[in-house]
Length: 114
Length: 116
Image (cartoon, one colour):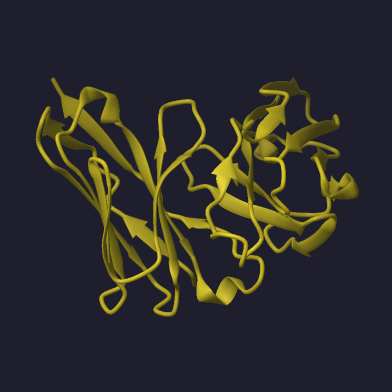
């Protein structure tokens, strides 16, 4: 059973703080990991991809991957009210073969309080 | 560069009717995916095209769903006859072929299907 687990939240942080979102996955051999942001009633928007162990930074966002522990996280620095959304973790499992479809977690709802 | 587009944005049909959803991927993206989110559940994979060929349709719920991709460009997803449990948001996503960049998939705005 291929699974992606996220804490559904809600997670509330004050404006300017660091928001930390976590995700674990079941397939140790997986190599492609993504974070999507989804505003209410909108489509998932890709904000980060990570393929190698370690950290990847893009502006205020940092993705962290630890394949040995099978977790991937997203840090949002200097959180803004506009960051309030549901954050979806998605994984391409090794067993998906050539299809390379995404398996999504249920999402973590983040609220940044002004 | 235009993103993934989907039509219609919202469809309300009665049980037993037919609905056809359309997706236009990002130009140059050979991979096209259909996903669905039903109320309260995670986004789930339905099927995958590489150009005009179905690569994997293991996520299709049953034979009431038929997907096509004409000439490797746009794709349609037909539901016939629609049932109440087909209600949800249908997303289309596209990506480059592996080796041409990455596995990053870009989503369209979705079609909200309501079956009454």
